[in-house]
Length: 172
Image (tube, rainbow, N blue to C red; front, side, top):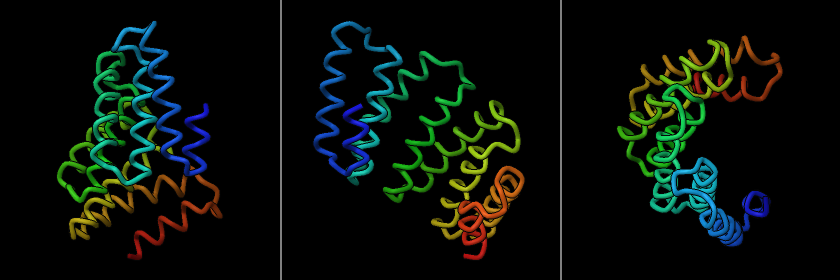
Protein backbone atom coordinates (compact mmCIF):
# COMPACT_ATOMS: atom_id res chain seq x y z
CA UNK A 1 0.00 0.00 0.00
CA UNK A 2 2.91 2.36 0.65
CA UNK A 3 4.18 1.68 -2.86
CA UNK A 4 0.81 2.59 -4.34
CA UNK A 5 0.56 5.80 -2.34
CA UNK A 6 4.13 6.85 -3.10
CA UNK A 7 3.69 6.16 -6.80
CA UNK A 8 0.49 8.24 -6.82
CA UNK A 9 2.36 11.10 -5.12
CA UNK A 10 5.19 10.92 -7.68
CA UNK A 11 7.66 9.61 -5.10
CA UNK A 12 8.91 6.97 -7.50
CA UNK A 13 12.18 5.98 -5.84
CA UNK A 14 10.39 5.49 -2.53
CA UNK A 15 7.61 3.55 -4.27
CA UNK A 16 10.09 1.13 -5.83
CA UNK A 17 11.77 0.71 -2.45
CA UNK A 18 8.43 -0.11 -0.79
CA UNK A 19 7.56 -2.64 -3.49
CA UNK A 20 11.00 -4.24 -3.26
CA UNK A 21 10.57 -4.66 0.50
CA UNK A 22 7.19 -6.29 -0.10
CA UNK A 23 8.72 -8.52 -2.75
CA UNK A 24 11.53 -9.57 -0.40
CA UNK A 25 9.05 -10.52 2.33
CA UNK A 26 6.75 -12.43 -0.04
CA UNK A 27 9.63 -14.34 -1.63
CA UNK A 28 10.44 -15.86 1.77
CA UNK A 29 7.11 -17.66 1.93
CA UNK A 30 5.77 -17.89 -1.63
CA UNK A 31 6.96 -19.84 -4.67
CA UNK A 32 8.54 -17.78 -7.47
CA UNK A 33 5.50 -18.22 -9.69
CA UNK A 34 2.89 -17.14 -7.14
CA UNK A 35 0.31 -14.64 -8.50
CA UNK A 36 0.98 -12.25 -5.61
CA UNK A 37 4.50 -11.80 -6.91
CA UNK A 38 3.10 -11.01 -10.36
CA UNK A 39 1.13 -8.13 -8.86
CA UNK A 40 4.23 -6.72 -7.17
CA UNK A 41 6.32 -7.07 -10.35
CA UNK A 42 3.55 -5.33 -12.27
CA UNK A 43 3.44 -2.47 -9.74
CA UNK A 44 7.21 -2.03 -9.93
CA UNK A 45 6.90 -1.98 -13.71
CA UNK A 46 4.23 0.72 -13.43
CA UNK A 47 6.50 2.91 -11.31
CA UNK A 48 9.38 2.57 -13.78
CA UNK A 49 6.91 3.27 -16.59
CA UNK A 50 5.82 6.46 -14.80
CA UNK A 51 9.48 7.40 -14.41
CA UNK A 52 10.05 6.95 -18.15
CA UNK A 53 12.53 4.12 -17.58
CA UNK A 54 10.95 1.89 -20.20
CA UNK A 55 13.59 -0.85 -20.24
CA UNK A 56 13.13 -1.41 -16.48
CA UNK A 57 9.35 -1.20 -16.84
CA UNK A 58 9.47 -3.83 -19.56
CA UNK A 59 11.68 -6.07 -17.44
CA UNK A 60 9.19 -6.07 -14.56
CA UNK A 61 6.09 -6.24 -16.74
CA UNK A 62 7.56 -9.31 -18.45
CA UNK A 63 8.27 -10.98 -15.08
CA UNK A 64 4.67 -10.35 -14.10
CA UNK A 65 3.44 -11.60 -17.45
CA UNK A 66 5.33 -14.90 -17.21
CA UNK A 67 3.63 -15.64 -13.90
CA UNK A 68 0.23 -14.65 -15.27
CA UNK A 69 0.70 -16.98 -18.24
CA UNK A 70 1.29 -19.90 -15.88
CA UNK A 71 -1.29 -19.02 -13.24
CA UNK A 72 -4.25 -17.72 -15.25
CA UNK A 73 -6.50 -19.21 -17.91
CA UNK A 74 -5.70 -17.91 -21.41
CA UNK A 75 -8.83 -15.72 -21.55
CA UNK A 76 -8.41 -14.02 -18.16
CA UNK A 77 -8.72 -10.19 -18.17
CA UNK A 78 -5.59 -9.86 -16.00
CA UNK A 79 -3.60 -11.55 -18.75
CA UNK A 80 -5.05 -9.01 -21.19
CA UNK A 81 -3.96 -6.21 -18.84
CA UNK A 82 -0.48 -7.70 -18.78
CA UNK A 83 -0.27 -7.70 -22.59
CA UNK A 84 -1.62 -4.15 -22.61
CA UNK A 85 1.04 -2.90 -20.17
CA UNK A 86 3.81 -4.37 -22.30
CA UNK A 87 2.19 -2.82 -25.38
CA UNK A 88 2.16 0.60 -23.70
CA UNK A 89 5.89 0.39 -23.01
CA UNK A 90 6.66 -0.50 -26.62
CA UNK A 91 4.35 2.31 -27.74
CA UNK A 92 6.21 4.80 -25.54
CA UNK A 93 9.53 3.50 -26.86
CA UNK A 94 8.34 4.09 -30.43
CA UNK A 95 8.38 0.39 -31.35
CA UNK A 96 4.91 0.50 -32.85
CA UNK A 97 4.91 -2.93 -34.46
CA UNK A 98 5.66 -4.55 -31.07
CA UNK A 99 3.09 -2.30 -29.38
CA UNK A 100 0.48 -3.36 -31.92
CA UNK A 101 1.37 -7.03 -31.42
CA UNK A 102 0.77 -6.82 -27.66
CA UNK A 103 -2.29 -4.58 -27.91
CA UNK A 104 -3.87 -7.05 -30.32
CA UNK A 105 -3.14 -9.98 -27.98
CA UNK A 106 -4.79 -8.04 -25.18
CA UNK A 107 -7.73 -7.16 -27.39
CA UNK A 108 -8.39 -10.76 -28.43
CA UNK A 109 -8.70 -11.78 -24.79
CA UNK A 110 -10.97 -8.86 -23.95
CA UNK A 111 -13.27 -9.67 -26.87
CA UNK A 112 -13.78 -13.15 -25.42
CA UNK A 113 -13.90 -12.18 -21.74
CA UNK A 114 -16.03 -9.02 -21.76
CA UNK A 115 -19.41 -7.95 -23.11
CA UNK A 116 -19.23 -6.06 -26.42
CA UNK A 117 -20.12 -2.73 -24.78
CA UNK A 118 -17.53 -2.85 -21.97
CA UNK A 119 -15.43 0.33 -21.52
CA UNK A 120 -12.22 -1.74 -21.34
CA UNK A 121 -12.93 -2.99 -24.84
CA UNK A 122 -13.33 0.64 -25.96
CA UNK A 123 -9.98 1.48 -24.36
CA UNK A 124 -8.40 -1.44 -26.20
CA UNK A 125 -9.73 -0.25 -29.57
CA UNK A 126 -8.47 3.23 -28.71
CA UNK A 127 -4.96 1.95 -27.90
CA UNK A 128 -4.79 0.15 -31.24
CA UNK A 129 -6.01 3.31 -32.94
CA UNK A 130 -3.29 5.33 -31.22
CA UNK A 131 -0.60 3.00 -32.55
CA UNK A 132 -1.91 3.27 -36.11
CA UNK A 133 -2.07 7.04 -35.61
CA UNK A 134 1.57 7.07 -34.46
CA UNK A 135 2.51 4.95 -37.48
CA UNK A 136 0.82 7.43 -39.81
CA UNK A 137 -1.86 4.95 -40.93
CA UNK A 138 -4.71 7.37 -40.36
CA UNK A 139 -7.45 5.35 -42.05
CA UNK A 140 -6.75 2.38 -39.74
CA UNK A 141 -6.50 4.72 -36.77
CA UNK A 142 -9.89 6.20 -37.63
CA UNK A 143 -11.41 2.72 -37.95
CA UNK A 144 -10.34 1.82 -34.40
CA UNK A 145 -11.15 5.22 -32.93
CA UNK A 146 -14.68 4.89 -34.30
CA UNK A 147 -15.08 1.38 -32.85
CA UNK A 148 -13.95 2.73 -29.50
CA UNK A 149 -16.31 5.70 -29.77
CA UNK A 150 -19.36 3.55 -30.54
CA UNK A 151 -18.81 1.58 -27.35
CA UNK A 152 -18.27 4.72 -25.30
CA UNK A 153 -21.50 6.25 -26.65
CA UNK A 154 -23.42 3.18 -25.44
CA UNK A 155 -21.60 2.65 -22.14
CA UNK A 156 -21.04 6.17 -20.85
CA UNK A 157 -23.28 9.13 -20.01
CA UNK A 158 -23.35 11.79 -22.78
CA UNK A 159 -21.33 14.30 -20.72
CA UNK A 160 -18.51 11.88 -19.81
CA UNK A 161 -14.98 13.27 -20.42
CA UNK A 162 -13.97 10.07 -22.25
CA UNK A 163 -16.43 10.96 -25.00
CA UNK A 164 -14.73 14.33 -25.46
CA UNK A 165 -11.36 12.60 -25.77
CA UNK A 166 -12.88 10.16 -28.24
CA UNK A 167 -14.25 12.98 -30.41
CA UNK A 168 -10.83 14.62 -30.26
CA UNK A 169 -9.09 11.46 -31.45
CA UNK A 170 -11.51 11.11 -34.36
CA UNK A 171 -11.13 14.77 -35.28
CA UNK A 172 -7.36 14.53 -35.19
